[in-house]
Length: 363
Ligand code: NAD
Figure (cartoon, rainbow, N blue to C red):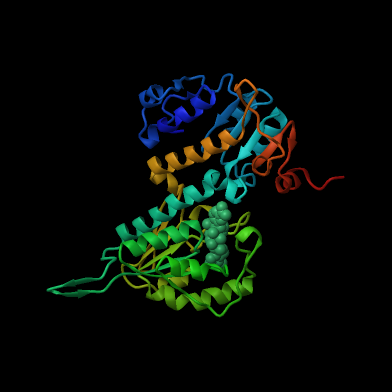
């Protein structure tokens, strides 16, 4: 939560309690929350109907909440099996921000998009900062300096934002994505789509599908010359529910020229670049390879502001008013957005893929 949005929740009829130091890493003081109308309280969880956080709660925290409490946070169910089971067993209603359906009515609640926007921008800025040459063309009395060549792999929300940012800084940007619609989206950002002689890979809901190992090998082979020529490579490719696809081998990075920079946004989820390490800069051949770790948190102000707005919009949808105008937290379980985002309720795992993974097929 950010102070400027506390008023939106109090206007809906909620009391807002914030843990001391909750905003410290986003440069927000306890006093600012208090001035905005929140109570700053060590026992902020006590008596809460809804507990909102960015990261999933600790298992112990979840177990301590009374049955019927709702939680709203990012909740990667694949990686948080223990927490999902704890929420089920404690009778909590847990909502995962990444499961909010990507329908137009839910766009204002789409935290994956808002955080990808921050991360994509940050990736381009990191690449520009690490590269020890100009991004733009410079025509000077002392001669012409050629612009940097940037290659972006994966042109979803983060990739497109990285492209737009690198373009604004004046680089020549080429980009590739497996989805059919991507070439047009890349071109609309002013970058050059890389056309490979490969079939497109469209999954459901506008997402990519996983590649076969044969196709992955062929894609790497066809991309290699583009990567060898790039001054900066930014990778943002992901497939929902899977480890990030390995798009660039160590050998491909070794072909890059001296001073080259690689930014792997997917380092935390398996890595698009072989050898990248989340949260570290490693050297591969001539290149410095930067592995992203919790990248949105590197721009905590805007990341928090956007996430808080997503949460406020979701809570607003989940708030009902009675005939006298008295509001209560009463999510409609039949609403597509509420149902889509709900992981556990009343002692059951409602998100079917998670339920199957943790409880198996029905008898
Ligand atoms: P994502 O984070 O799941 O993946 C990032 C990108 O990686 C995707 O564009 C994907 O196609 C690409 N990718 C996967 N495998 C690849 C490979 N082997 N090589 C190259 N690229 C690869 O995706 P995202 O950013 O969440 O967006 C996915 C789609 O959802 C996009 O079409 C986006 O426009 C759409 N979207 C819709 C809404 C909405 O309707 N509300 C909101 C956000 C995004």
